[in-house]
Length: 216
Ligand code: GDP
Image 1: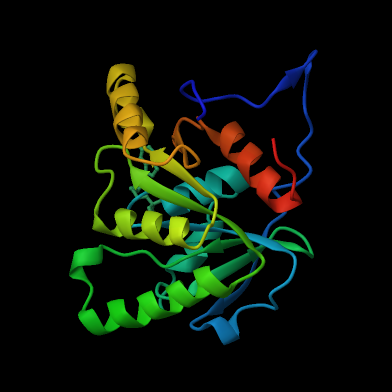
Image 2: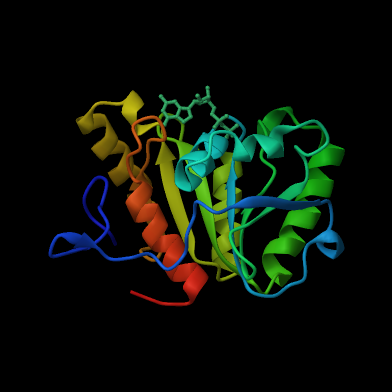
């Protein structure tokens, strides 16, 4: 289990270890409603999920140093699709549809669950899942479901407690400890703030490991 609030990338002398994935050169690739419509199952990809308003677009934009990349996923017609972004020829970030779970009609929920479940179980190039939860409202039904699915699919899971800047340091720590306590030790949990640009280094480190196939 990781410790510390916003763990920084390892420093060697005066230099940060170079990340082998460049998160700044990212482009929208395609959208998919079903597994068949997804890009070819090769290379490596990492998926981001979270209830709507969890801060997913802001986090993806902060990670990739883009202003409105992830807004693409919010354009009409794309909100219920799996949206793919290419980092390079072999690596992708994937924005999974998220919504105010309770408000969604049963038929949409069923359709979405079926395809998402299929995507998570069958996508060989999927190397890990990033689940975003607003630090003030963690562990809702949607989050529990994604955690269960990830564990059942043996998919590495990294949780971001977003909008950490909304709480004072003590509140951040309490929330971090509370969320960690209920989870298996292989699940990573970290604080994140897109507004303050805090926690990006640690997220990059995890994604880099997953996308390059290197373990710590
Ligand atoms: P999404 O629906 O999950 O993509 O969420 P958005 O990224 O659109 O963010 C939802 C709202 O939370 C917006 O009003 C953002 O400005 C706000 N927000 C996102 N990240 C942060 C953060 O790190 N700190 C604060 N204070 N607000 C944030």
